[in-house]
Length: 317
Image (tube, rainbow, N blue to C red):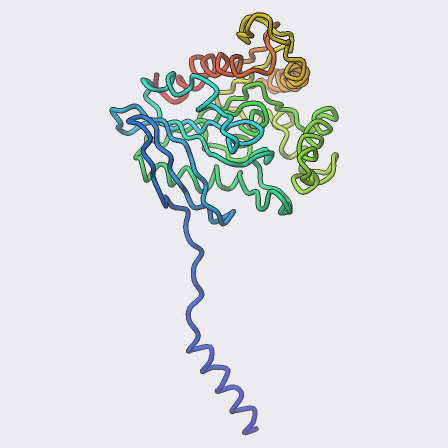
């Protein structure tokens, strides 16, 4: 009995003397680099991924309390310098617009979703959590905002932009897919997405499981069109046939790869268009007869999405 008493006293003393568990660090701004009067890079710590994510931010020089557009980059997340900032006229287009545009840098081949498992190469992908639960609050606090949000994505991130609106109802007033695939569980799309991720030596099954697993359907906007009711929706694509919108220099080799990719996302957009029509959900669908998977096309679609869908939903111009 004396031995038991001594052990109990020792355990209690150890517990009382142990330091309190440290609470998880919150998402927060950890650095700001001002590149111009209208362009900064804001580094945000993400607890979900335990990493610092840099974010390009475009704001008019006059500042003020503004709505926010979360504009997602393509396949490599602008980690290679290829994205809206360097390959389109987006910075100039938004220079006089009454909106804060936030463009996360990172998330290559992540489809901006929460992966089921960490990847040996890509690490922890919890982009849905970052974009819906961490980043908006940090941006609202740092810049001051009207708390009116929209999200748009291009190519790889087009379908995921609509999925984010499905997964976080009420967060976004508008959502836009620009030459993306908002029908991810379609067999053609599953094959293309798996090849895209696997082609860079990553394991595509770490994202939503093997093709046909439940998570593929759970993150397919075309299967949840009814959950977009009340959100202003835009989905754009083109046939894949190169045209004037691509602004291809005379004498250049036709972009055969871009043509094939755009034709595939055009199929996805058609599936999504049918889904919102059946659900009776209003949406702006822009399926062009000409256009390949080019930044010139993307830029034109972004301007169209802004004028028809995003700006009116945000109550700005």
